[in-house]
Length: 278
Image (cartoon, rainbow, N blue to C red; front, top):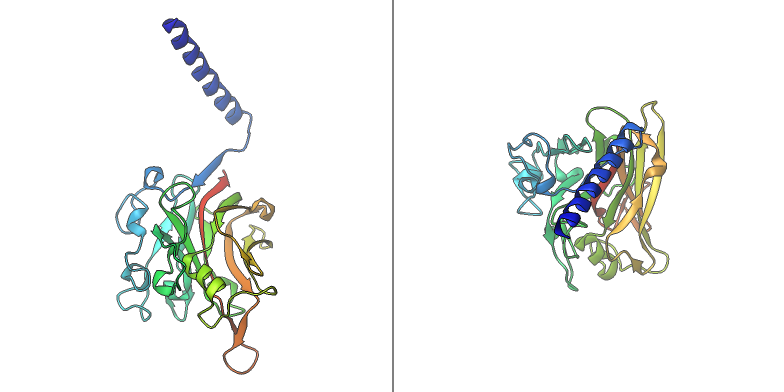
């Protein structure tokens, strides 16, 4: 009986291997997933010289040299990350205010958690109010400068570093602790969300021929907001060489008495498990 069981298991393993090989040989699309977990790190050393994701997590969420340079809010940072040998997605901080710093937006790796009913500030800007990432400890936090009309080239962007166009099938997204706090309690110049308020993410797909595509995801509508991880289908963007992220909300304030506005709600969202058709 034991020999029969071993034989059956061997046959099942052989069949699975054969099916995987047949799928690859038939040209069926293969997928890769960016999890941000150290166990899945496949590339060479990151720009800090470490072969992991966790070394890219800032200890100080609001003023760490990793994200803000030697003089926080006054100097540039070389912060970047690359999912080499897997999805090939790459990100470096965009230039805003004449420097590259998370103060002007970007995508930071994080594993910070904070679930509280009390007010949360930017001091915990890299935290989420859940028990961890979608499939582990690490995730990414995307921050967008809240000035309305921020030029596209200054938006946080995911690139395929090898320049090859691919379909990003989906990613899992959720609210950060700071943004959820402002939605529910107010703060940062915003009032708690009412029935006419909303907050959404906008993904702008950059295609090899110079055209763009667009996809949106709602994080909050009225007093209802996303309270868990949710899968965002991005396949409608088509094959892209990069994706830029923006956000939009209902509350805005003029800061020059004219037509220049900023959004009142802090524009952050967290994401994890980005699936790419290779």
